Image (cartoon, rainbow, N blue to C red; front, top):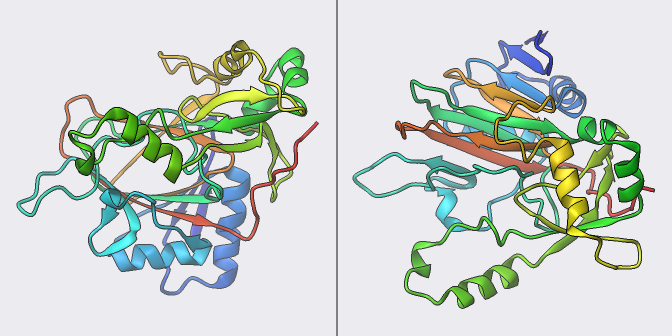
Length: 295
């Protein structure tokens, strides 16, 4: 396998000639190191069947099935499918997923360590993912905002962006919301996390899932603080020109791995609604997300 550092301002790692059938444990540990430190690793020219894709995920950690079955691949429920393809046998997966700033499973008790993203059908126009490195975002905060978030915790919930299931049709919205709160009750994480592998401080908030910030005594802080943090990190910039934002576009055969603790992301959907499909496997590693509040 051959590793190349990308030359743009938001350098990740491109990996050529990777074959998981012959990859050694040292190869995998090297790639894990680069995911932690470089945040994005692109395996080029991959041709994997669903079972092999899941097995690749097992090399990096423990794959976790998404909690909503309507996203599952019919051959393996560890694969999350985003697809707008029309098939005779019916819809597989869910169309236009992830069009908002978030970290995968940020609203769950055990968020993922790594996301493995494998486009299957790409449109002719732009299809990619926008990213923000939230360790860099924390570093760039003003002294006032760094002081304001010290010792605080943030509340996270899926309630704003849960997609309505087919079984929810004709149900009262209050019942649907009650189900969301029961299945995915709000989670509390430090507003500033310490990365367990790199020691970086990460601003652990997102436009999609974070809805409140509290001080060390559980007192709600002004909503303006969350708004200021989202704005400073780039998540409120509708032009997507904020210096914290970078874009990863895809070529056929690309398989992209990223650090889900540090990066938040937002899908770059093609406005023409051309046929598009992608698979995703998400895994935990041996490091739990720290509940310790950074000062």
